[in-house]
Length: 335
Image 1 (cartoon, rainbow, N blue to C red):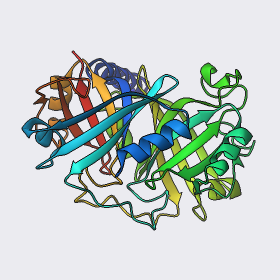
Image 2: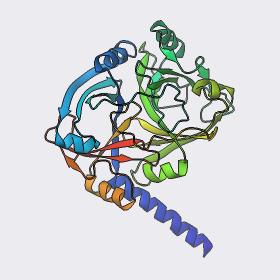
Image 3: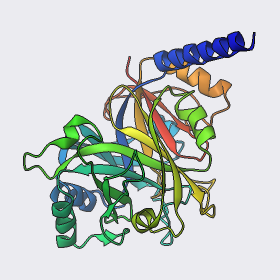
Image 4: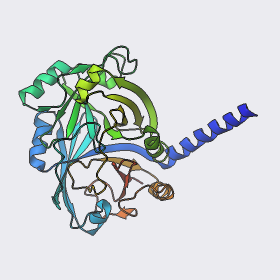
């Protein structure tokens, strides 16, 4: 009987996952990154990192105020592409947000970054030094071979001109997607994932996997001198869980097992604040996702599925959710 019960529970979990996937996120569309000066930020991403601009739009009005939960909103958005992946640089013209705290660390609850894959770490590091970027890591770090899932990966953290943390990462042969093994002279290849600091992996899986329908694609237990030098956090020991939708960059959960002194996301965080990032996700079932969020008591910033007056941002309807740590997910109606 016990074996049968375990089998039934496993089957129920699989069916629940299948339903979540069918009614959940179908793709990660892009990652929204706040900036205070759109022209300056766009120049950095295009000239230094090889992004190309796809579009630039300005939006305002009652529907957008409701979507972001911000009164008097005027927002300018530039959509940029690197390889097959997109980011959106977001400058809130009104109201102006608060700057990123100068003493931010990678284990603080508001931390988020994107991982830009490079074909040649030494070449990428030389280019970043040429443009005098602000370093977070002491130098590019090669993760040790004793770590089976991360061994051989080379990575380096740095800041853009706004103080946002970015990562360049090179996969060794046999790791990462096949497209990240390109060696055709292109230095910056695309975006593998965005990573967020979380207080509890289990709570975050309840949101990203069970509610949104993302699938776990890997995990790693990272610690040691190389990890400390990479994140610039003394004693860093991370539990890393990677999730993915069918298309688009992944979403990595970074739980710091040590140190546990990271500060939580400020509870009054709003979209114009410069530490606010959002992951833009597509769904074919927005009503079902919204009903699930409400049933699970997930914070719904927008209150409801907001019908937009135009498709300036690429979709006609959306709502914004907050994960257990306060990170934002913009759910796009792609029916």
